[in-house]
Length: 264
Image 1 (spheres, rainbow, N blue to C red):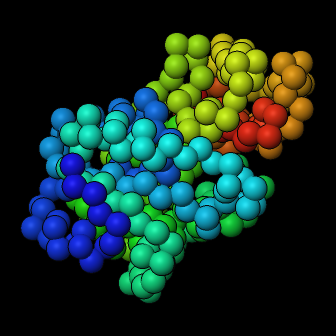
Image 2: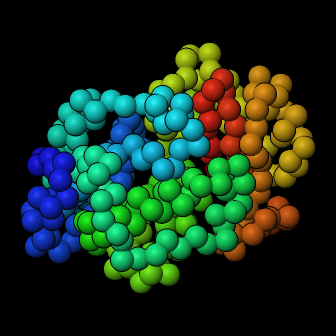
């Protein structure tokens, strides 16, 4: 695995890569990331992974500072997975140029996480757009756990006619039912148990489709701060009001000081 910290050196190395697949991460690698990387390797062979904790998509400095960072462990894992390239930029390397493409924020950006995290998706699309211009990958692999983010990146790519295809991968879950997430590293055993009970209960009773019911139920599990619970048609991206719709339930809440999202 070749590691690059400067985009100029990276671009010289990959200039002749015709079928490069890209897995963007903020580190704290887990089974979900591993699945993305293994999918990329099996389908497209050549893989580049980025690790960069992007300050522009965080709501506060505290949240940015406490985001799990396990760089040595991550690098060792990527070597075992036989990733071809790892891009580890710093702030100046990634933000020192003016992108060609304008950020496109689809109206979905105002729903769900967009209601309480007003600049979050602008920050996400900013960094992804920069990565795409630097790397010019043929494919970008994204997980369905971050469904809203996945759709917004896809809409941005389509709007700007960027020659990169989005490959979506199913959410990877632990045996206890919780979605794999870097933020899980911030939870203790008791909090993991609370999360597992809450997620599994909602999954079993998803078709109740009653927001107030789920809000009250989550509180009985000890979850006091809830950002949202909503039902979204995954095809039309509009609110689902009928059990026959092809819908997912989307949730965001805090366990302790850790904000977690999921959908299923």
